[in-house]
Amino acid sequence: MIPEHLKYTPTHEWFFCDNKSITVGLTKFILDELEDLLFLDLPKVGDEILSGISFGEIESFEKLIDITSPMAGEVIAVNERLYENLITLNNDPYKHGWLIKFVTTETHILNELLNAKEYATHISKLRPIVTPVKQRKRHAKITKGKRRK
Image 1 (cartoon, rainbow, N blue to C red):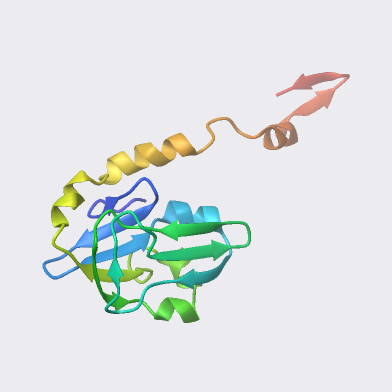
Image 2: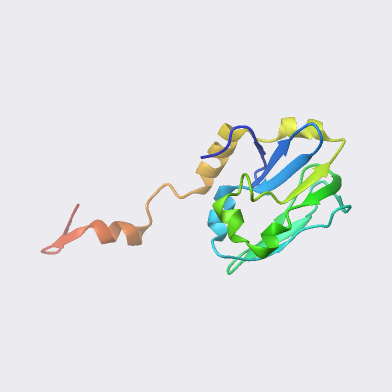
């Protein structure tokens, strides 16, 4: 389920704005794609993040993904508990799996991000529509040289 109170980027970051700061995390979709997480690199409190420039990265056995923000700002909190337990990202990406919190003067950019419905449409285009051939063959029965469903 995609939380409706958040905003999303096509690169699978989510954003939540309260009166004081913006919280950033990664979506369940991208974390499921990464599977077994190995490494997380995040900025430190006080660091500046730049719009569209990687402020961190996450690595799995097969992939390395940059984490970006469409807004510039100053980091005011980092979820350091993730360094000790990366599984929290997979298990609870929208609550305990947040990455950083930052302050910005560019909150108007949130209005340009995807809402939950738009993000769902975006990721549905990324998933294969047809069942992979290997899975379909497993369900088919072969009888006298003819395939039966």
